[in-house]
Length: 480
Image (cartoon, rainbow, N blue to C red; front, side):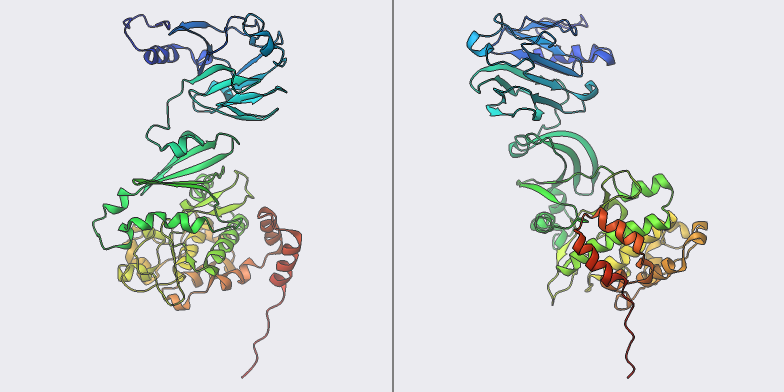
């Protein structure tokens, strides 16, 4: 039976409870993060490189894993030395000097566990061969086989909290569920790892009952079919500035969308951490946002919820690729149709939406307004419309009343301010299209353009062609 380190628990306490008691009682530097149970193998030939404890639980020998890395093989430098005392000779002859490594970075329970195969004859997890010098995620209750899938040598126990409780089998079979990245109005986002490739993704979980419980049952937002709208759109989108969807699982109560993981966080947190962004950086980010919006608009898609929270950054570098995400409020717009759903974030939403309560028609120009608000925020670290400015923000938006109040505006070019003024026009008919925005004088910056195209990883011919189109002088209007 597992040792009860606290000495206060009865002999009838469960094995799981004993395991957690041991983990929690260990000093940080010796935390037990996993356990390796012998299945068809005798565990007794431990090396002297590190100190491990063999315990006897439920008629099985096991090893507590409390170092960042654990190795097993025939070599004497391994943590577990495999000999004839442990394995039949016909199996031992196929064991490599270092057969496999199990690793958890910094022994942190929040990090995934990796197993790397270093053998010529193979290490198998749940009957699947890992492959020489390849690795995969090792999950709780995974079975490790040596040299052949039928020789099941070990069972791995992960002693970290189980983040996968309540998730569908289609998800837990394929992904290792990690920490929460954030939450929103309709669900939360978790960091996940694809088990076989070890690739990181962000999994967005949308609860359908968050929508069907709407107080307005006739609203488009309460339509259960709307929950899948984001997935249907994103599955067909391929652009360097639009977040890619990797996988989707649709269940009766929730939709699970597996999206590419952006390590740099969102634009809102970048602005907050920097107080504001330089005009040079703002221009680089804004150009990429416009490229994403153009891609969407050309395909009849209006985002309708553009805001810094929904703009993700690939890295923590100043010059980084940017991607537009979260199409939860998007909708396909046919040539002869209009959008009538009241949606979006109030401080970024267009005046025509607020003025009509979403009951009247509005168009893709709502995205242009939101882009103007985002650009304003990037350049000054403030919002153009706010309840703190004396009158309700909604009234300011409806009237298009804003000012360049912050001292930072003294350092911003007039061309940038002119573009913001053009995008934040109350009458949507007078607002520029996304194509017109991309042709504005402020964005005619060759250095920024080349930098953005390199970040977007477009081929040289496409860069050269668009650069020539971008830099050609405007054509003169013919007199009538």
